[in-house]
Image 1 (cartoon, rainbow, N blue to C red):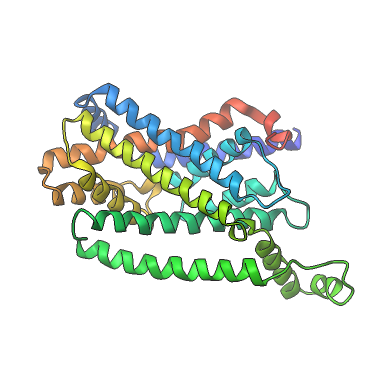
Image 2: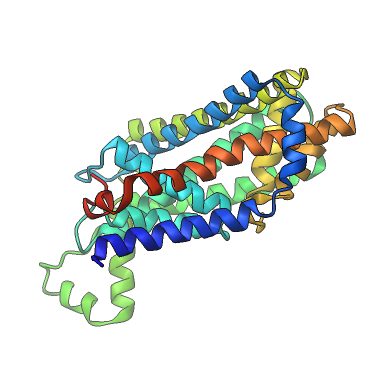
Length: 327
């Protein structure tokens, strides 16, 4: 068996295992019964809006690539689709590691490709954090935040502030190691600590988006566009069940599930997502039965494109695309 076919087979098997573990926990009878009570057209709109998140995400990651690194939109879509499958179905942080690894196989040079992948993932997390902060601020324009969300906003502000300050300092003050420098290159390569230092300096050198305001603003705009697409999916599910909470109520639901799933360790966020959505709907005045139906339907039409697209692409593209490095 060729190496490319073996890599594809391992990736496909891992994605399949993640999907089986995640979806085996779904109470499909209950979900099917709930979905049958909604308007199919609106539920399809919700699923398509959630699918569009992957396209926006791929565009953002291409923008975050350091100068000189090139990857087609098609290839980046394949990367983020697989990352989404792993992130939404696997253990915490596996999605981030998968993203860095997949990018390392497609961009960069031998000495810096993993550093470039890590840089893109770090920029993604910064933009995502800023988008969630702005989401909570938007909720405040309509209604006071529940105590749980107030605490989450404070924690998020601190975390995003620390991450942002660290990345900005690294982008503007740290330089990449120069192997040609006899006083630096051989010394760095000689020790484990030196290799770690060189790697981190390569990561800092790959943070081009933080040295170009247009790239930084564009990346944040795409993160907000992803939140808008998810918000549109939530609104479409509500329309499918004849519920109208307005913009404020829908923003509250989005904020609740976005923050709750940040700390979830459950596969596919099952239970955590539904509980946070249910609590938000109840706070918005929806009766318990309808709140349960909305929470289940909302998660189903989000989870299917978020986890199924990556598995489907791995199945359809096969080992040939793996051998080509995604392009």
